[in-house]
Amino acid sequence: MSNNKEMDPMTGETVETDGIYANENGQEAVLKRGDEFPADLILGETTWKLQGFADDAVVDHDQSELNPMRKRVDART
Image 1 (cartoon, rainbow, N blue to C red):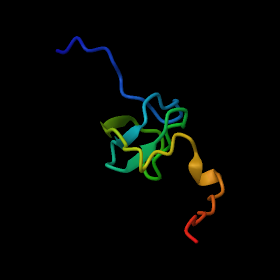
Image 2 (tube, rainbow, N blue to C red):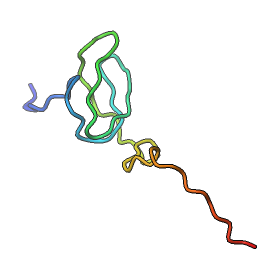
Image 3 (cartoon, one colour):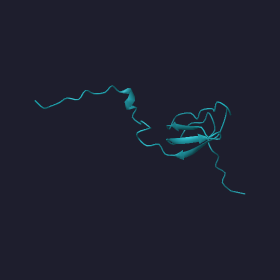
Image 4 (cartoon, rainbow, N blue to C red):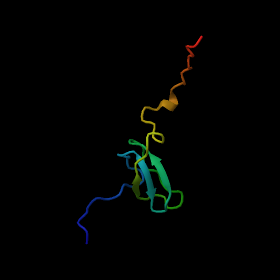
């Protein structure tokens, strides 16, 4: 018997670490810190396990997708 008392996060709990998580059914989700662990469509409430850390291309920490693109100025004349 293991002495590890740590439990995997459950649906409805807050994500503490950015990463790729998988639930008991094998569904994967990319979640950011502060997100809420979602429910599974089949299982309902489920536990989630961290599968790997998301890279910066997937997790947009500064939410730059909400900022308008700046136009590039071509200085050549």
